[in-house]
Length: 76
Image (tube, rainbow, N blue to C red; front, side):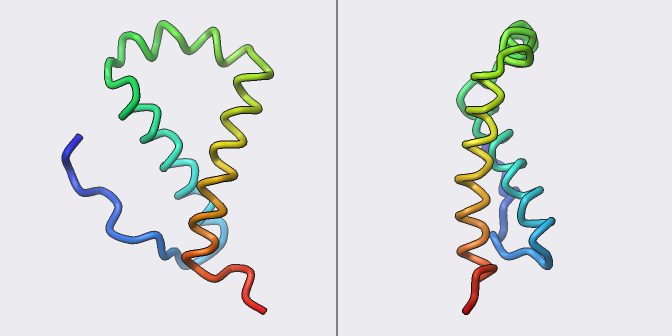
């Protein structure tokens, strides 16, 4: 995956920032496991696991913190 798909972390709204955080999380999974067949085979396991879903939410939250910091969402 050598294509350039992330020109900036700057977004127009916090919701777009959250959606970017989700995209970052999904891309991270694709980079870690590039075989789509393996991803499809594993999906039922993590889709029905509250631990896996909570971990996924935590990863999204970390990415959102990064995007929010880049966009100064918590400006004082």
